[in-house]
Length: 229
Length: 114
Image (cartoon, rainbow over all chains, first blue to last red; front, side, top):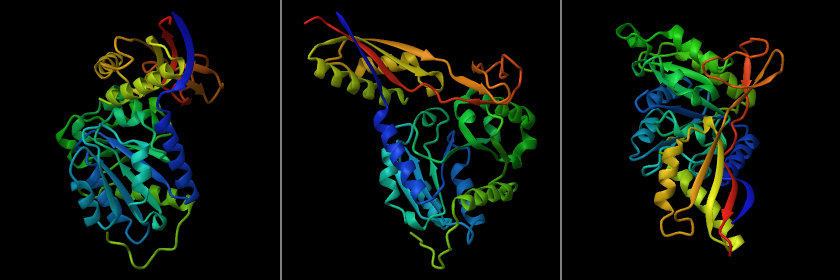
């Protein structure tokens, strides 16, 4: 028997694509947000509402990841933004190579902000770097206030956490103070937004934050004719 | 569930090395940080399933999980992050930065004697 030291990164292929994506986005000064949550937290509704709220201010594009169907991409297009749907056929996360391909399916050079809506899953997507600028976690009130403590990975790495569906707070035992404390234990600098994508409550603060982020990168002169893909 | 994807990458990495060494691998050690969210048992199971009829069949996979480290923003001490005690063990300050998690690494391979 003989032992051979290897010391090789196993996910090197994904990391190489992620680095390439990061460079591609940096060159074009487009912030890219990788949105991660459980299924049913309201990611797509939130993005649709965000697109509507920022209409005329930011040109937004969305890469959608789902196991099957293009229902989400259709919803995004209906809200007025170009969208490309990736079907993972069973895989629980998006990979950086899929994002590299998707860039060219969107009018990328006209975008001020790019969202990637990852496959609904609070665990796996946090392992795979896509080359995004930041990760955003979404937690909805009916999921319960123990999720940041139970699934710390994504909450520790997220630049912002959106607590969605706050319109039904009164009907639940969800404790906002506890959630905020649990998140800040993992990362004191995470921005926390309380929103309801359905009623629009709190959307202004979130959209202002996005605008500031895109501004600090670069705000393009808005095109008068918007692509409706 | 992403353990299946990872098992495939582990298999490819070991097989590539085996080809280079022109020998049969009988054990391999991999390591990763705890925040990689990889379940050790699931990964072993997935690896066993996909390595059937390959050069890695019956290979013993040894897995080491590495703790995640944090750096205190006040006293700059580096410490092992504990979810249940999220304060700097040195100065008790609660503002710290989580350091990057240890990557998924293929550490070493044991080959059969030729």
